[in-house]
Image 1 (spheres, rainbow, N blue to C red):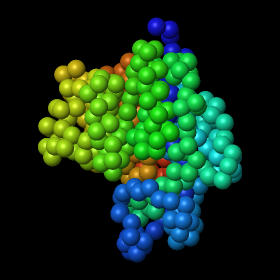
Image 2: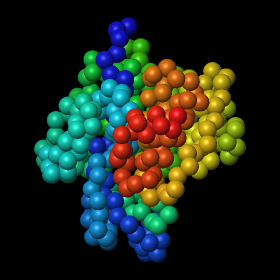
Image 3: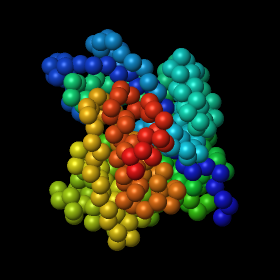
Length: 330
């Protein structure tokens, strides 16, 4: 096995987040599920955008957010995702490359625009996400080179992109390439409604030993395992993956590996501004610790610290020197 050139390569949605403040009443008026995430079509995207107040446009996408955190911590990363040949595609490409992340997938020509997620944020920082996948769901397996996947120590996959047929084929190709190269595979199912649609596929990946590191929150854990008991759920998954990480919001997080268990509390924060990307940056902190050979507890703490930075401002990309931020709190 050759020494990997990259720490992590990820496949995920290439999305621009459009973030605006709103009231709880507006969430109800628009018929949205507070704190949830739904997939929308182009017409719905236009309707919801028109209903938003002043908004901020920030590059996003779950796996891309995780890579942004990893790169800010000092990891070497690469991203595979699809943008369109349009203004938002240029914004995404600029932002991810400016963060030091390798991104070489050519922009796609045609009428399908770059993906965007319309995020309504209430006064308590809770985010309600509405995602138009656009060009991101047209990522083809041709964009995944076996040699590129083999260059990274860890392949990181987001469940959000499992639903469209073409990206699913691209991720399956990447999984095979990572396994053939002896690399580790990390996976997050992303959201309970994605699990509802693809639970059989996700459980098969786990049962076949194709997932080394699993990231999920406690709601996703229950949906995936079908078990209401948190302890029963983690016991079921921990027996099948090398490393299991489960976040519990304000209650912190737990990780299990090879019979070892570690837990950390959530990091204290003066005010929660926007929870968008909290799980993504938690995964960034944990993965950084993992690829640097840190133990479960230290990696968990790094994840909690990264999550605390991201929820202190709008958007899911770090706004400070994340490496210094983490170092000062370890």
